[in-house]
Length: 61
Image 1 (cartoon, helix red, strand yellow):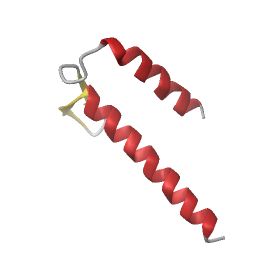
Image 2 (image 1 turned 120 degrees about the horizontal axis):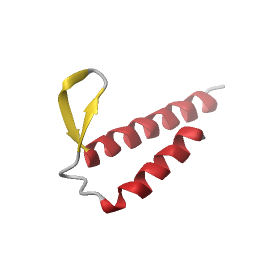
Image 3 (image 1 turned 90 degrees about the vertical axis):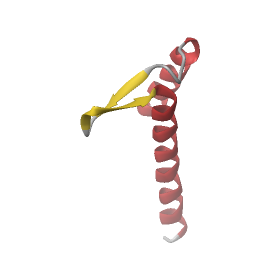
């Protein structure tokens, strides 16, 4: 829940930022930089995938 609240805070703070011009680094390589919007998209989709995985596990119990 804390991570979800942090994500909401980051999204709120990013309302005044150009998501196409602002770049973010990634943990696996200091040479690769993504647009902030792409970073948000990746994290959100990644979290959605985990929720779907958890739902599948719960339905198979």
